[in-house]
Image 1: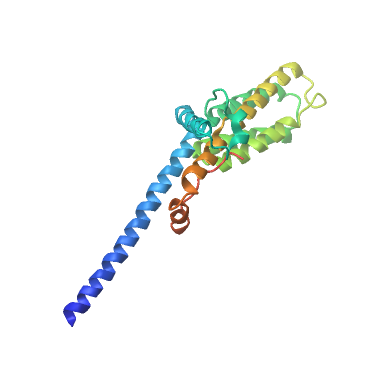
Image 2: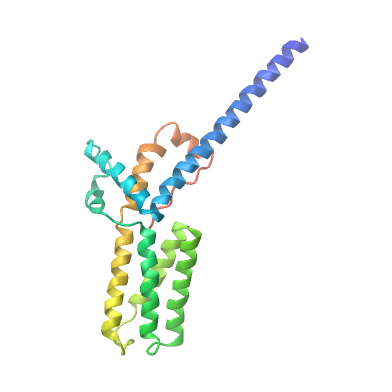
Length: 206
């Protein structure tokens, strides 16, 4: 009887270990896959590869993401590169407006720029988006009634800043996240395992 009980116990332990190992392995592999998608936000080579996979998905007749076709056309650098340009443009704007604006306005832009730099360094896409939106808001509040010196130069740099912001948003990164979710994470068994093991999904830039 003891032998039978020990055998049953061993079988139960075996299956429990197998289940836990499967869940841990699934968590690790799905987490790595999610992290690899986010790498497209920071590296143009990864973004280019993901965009090519997305385009092939569409070319094979899948229209689940058809509304994104135009956004995927052309070639873009990774969003992070364009946001680094925004940091540089914001610095140039600060140098142009320093004699015109109040200390409060200057500090708002200055601190927003620093927050964006910190977010880019931490590689938190949600924080990066929030920091850029705040910096964009402060810069767009400036007009000819506030900037009286170097206004033409200011407008030129602000246009460059706006273009870099638009290009970061239109890089195709968010569409690559959607493609990943549709083709991998929302399919069985990944769609079940990611909930069971609390896998963090790739963040979109929005």
